[in-house]
Length: 465
Image (cartoon, rainbow, N blue to C red; front, side, top):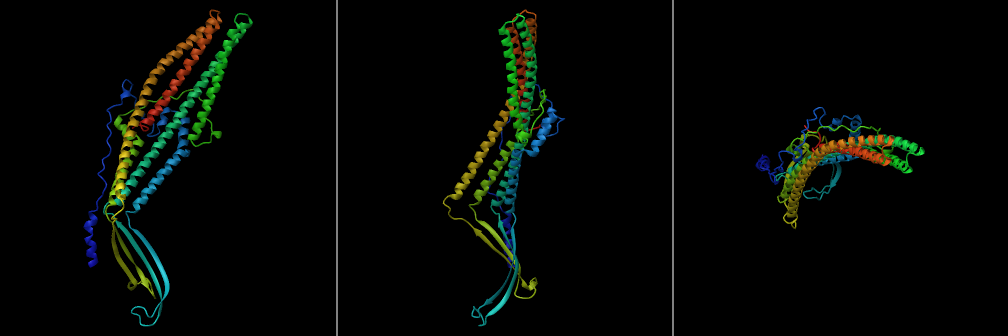
């Protein structure tokens, strides 16, 4: 009963176990009431029809939906991020195992001969068999919170890694959508150039006919030929850019570029309405910000781990089993047990190692706090950039469309005037070139609008609630 009383005497000390980690307060980031660049822009309606997370479905393109699904399954970038998350979860489980005692078991069988002249011997040597089966338990009493803070830090790192995975997934989804938007832009450019080649070829044929009849000069024929050849050359240039973009998409979805192709489509993607929400919601939706906050929490816990090294470590042992030299082993008279030792170990001198470790832990906390603030500032900048781009590109698209339509009308008038002999071919070439450039500029603006909407979704942390 004396052993029991001594063990019970430890209970208040065990219950009073404390943590050396500072009290944690999540970092605060001042968020404005609204995004500045939203002013003057028509508020978008939420994408209620699109499932949560599958934001690309708002574009209504089955090819893009298929590409996103393939990327989710086969992207090596995403697979690497998932593997890092699995490592972090395993590391957390390793640290969590220290909260529980370590239990071992063993067995031993041997035959021994002891000297007859041993201490308290009777002068006769003795030979006997010895059989032992037992178990042991070792447990570190986490009086200063070293183990608990290590577990907290590892758990927070696992949560941060989970958010890293979400961030990598969002970045991959946005990269696939952005590359596909550029691909569709190149398809529209190629379709426009093919139409222009047809028109320029018709004009070239008319000029050549007029030249044979002595009505047009050789200079007009060469100008027409130049415009036609330039348009054909631009088709090849666009085809080259399209091929590179198609290969980029292949790598993103985990496919071999040699076996991968996307059928051309002449129309651009529709531009969906993207709800911006409020700046405070941005801080909740961005996975990179969530990961940064979890790493601050882990660093705070590691300060407690470092400070716990100033205090002694306490361990408790327990053994038990059966031992016999003959007969049945597992019988009550053959049993044995032992409680203890209860041991304490403290470092008296370490040359300043523990002080340096605490300082390093605090410096890590300060570094991660600064990284969190940087992530918040970057998130607001990216969101404001994307909102501003969407607003200004929308206005630019309206004006550019007016310019393209006016240039197209001018081109038709100039061609009719030349056909009727009312002007020379320089007027036609100038008008046709201006019309083509204006139409290509419109396609470029609309392509950038698609890309800006994708960038906004990414900046907002994915699909909004």
